[in-house]
Image (cartoon, rainbow, N blue to C red; front, top):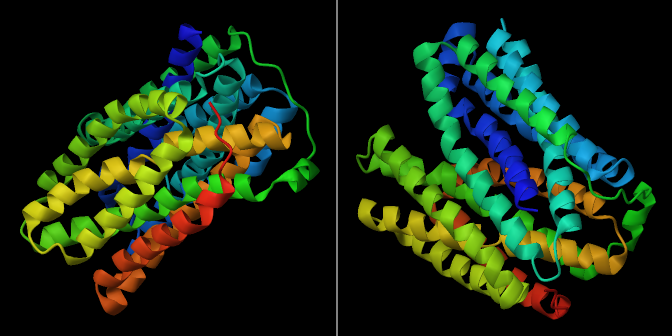
Amino acid sequence: MRRLVLLLSAVVAVDTMFYTALAPLLPHFASRYGLTKGEAGALSAAYAVGVLAASVPGGLAASRFGAKWAVLVGVALTAAASLGFGLAGSGWALGAARLAQGIGSAFSWAGALAWLVGSAQPGRRGALIGTAMGAAVFGALLGPALGALATLVGVRPAFVAVSGLGLALCLLLAGTPGARAEPQPLSALRRVDAPLLAAIWLVILPALLFGVLTVLVPLDLHDLGWSGAAIGGLFFATAALETAWNPLLGHLSDTRGRLFLLRFALLGSIAVSLALAWADTSVLLAALVVVAGLTYGTFYTPGMALISDRAEHAGIAQGLAFGVMNLGWAMGAAVGPAAGGALAQASGDVVPYLLLAGICLATLAYSQPRLRLRSA
């Protein structure tokens, strides 16, 4: 079991590493291929488009053919996307590689989470998901470093070499016994009930919260005199704390219950969002970013475990449930930055943060009566 957890943690870490590697390279690609801001934004958004397109197919594949094969397809596409980045000769080729990365991510995440849950011992589901989420955040930390390295040694050698890591993971996955398949048609989603929808929403919500935070805070800190390096260092430190925080969350969700942590996340997110609305000094804003990283990030591990619990209760295959979860996350990740930025542009930062606090408050009131089932 330990080997499987390490292997699947490596899968999600590599996936998020490739995802976040684009940020430091975007100016390079914009200059080399003459991309406008809109085109650069479209290049970045191609990942979310890929996840949206492949979320349900990835979940169906994990259900029908087994989680192992969904992960294999996802990792292979991610490796191909890395190779595409290295060999791309145009903005269109880069966009295709980014799209393939999103498709691969949808397959990898649905398969990896279903595989972990299917192999979990009783009472260990949350701990395993927490370990995987910690690995994912760690991969997100490595991504900008990979992008920075590529600016020094060259995009082609860096990404062609890293694609070899994906190939190595494919070979290791191929030799690992897979979890039992749970073939189900798409019509099985008719069994989705209110508690499962509420659980899925509790994974969409942090995507919205982080989407607004990562757009508004860097702009505000820049206006307050922070350099790009200092802003990057703040988010790096916050993510490092999240890496250590998620395994602990997994253990607590197994021992104290999913709802205990989700209430903490909702109450903490309301308080942090209200504080962010009126933070007017760089020191206070930086401190709130760290607290927000922990409170907003608390949703994911118990939320995913709760989705697994509720899907099992409703008779829905784990892979299919996590595929739908991917779809919801991608929608939240796309809507959060765009809506938060537009609202801030029109009416200032206070409005989007107050709206986030209100959404969290409404979620607290709506979800609690519908999530009474405590799953270990």
